[in-house]
Image (cartoon, rainbow, N blue to C red; front, side, top):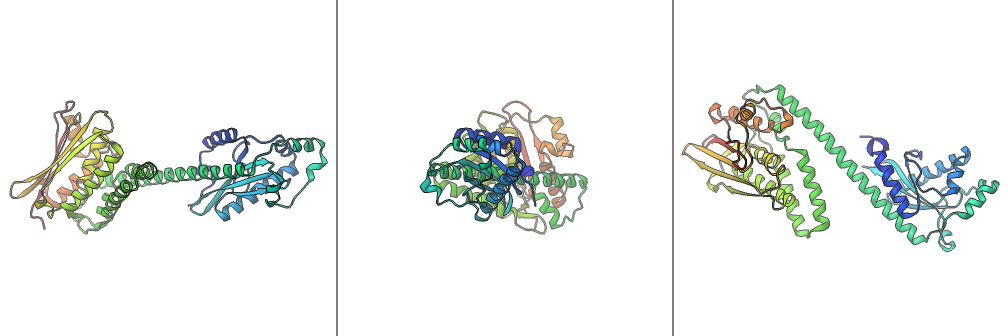
Length: 407
């Protein structure tokens, strides 16, 4: 997708950051678009440049110089140090997304020591039209000097800031796009509540996309923090768990069925990642004997239930939350029970969830999908059950029933 700088970045926030950077580094700074036109107000400009830009001819030369610097930075993919047409030392830091040039951060308007200046090329042909103004000559002589090495270090820091801004904006944009797709998907699911028994592979795959994209981005952010703050081994384990989860989501099955063992592995990977995110805010036990691991079950039948535990039990509270997952059978059917220690659910709301009357914003559409899929695959007698005393710390129990011989 093609974007302009204004569409991609919050210009107001960018202006604040620009002002702070310019003040702290004592250097001029402005952000220009892909044509060299400023999109922010000038920060820290020297008196010479501020006065010079009041003249249309000199202003055009400045814009042309900024544009040329930004485009060279675009080609190199890194900060470029140069001299503008009047001889000041400046730098251009590219702002790029997936190879698309959006603009640049232009900084400088300083003089450096002669030994370094002679090695710095002009971005455009030198033009001394300013020498026809005694006022500009006086302002030119007053322009501050900066150590060349310090200037290069400042340019590198500015490049790191620009890269961070782009990464954050890109993450927000992807998250927004995924959320839009998720809402579209949920709306389609709501329109087709009376799904036919012979659901095709595409419909089951659509259901698999109910995984909350906010969780996925939390995972990515957590991995980034761990890479910086923690040991590499821990980060590697988290990446491994996350990769296993993604591979599991991409599994294909014509009936939307997987083995319980694979489903349990997915849930354990999910919990491992949440343990890194949440620290000691929760604990869980998973007592599902291996003898049940080969029993077929609907794809993603447990993860939405476990995710609701975090959304409605762990996240809203500061106390320790617990979840237990148990499995047992009566010789014909397998029972999977999830029990938490939350504040419970009112009986009226349970009826709404079972009936599919809770809207998608409540997070209960995942439960209703599970109810639909189990009924379509196994019949009405295998309907998911929810029970709760609806009292603080007495929790909620969810019971799943699956036939042990359902090949």
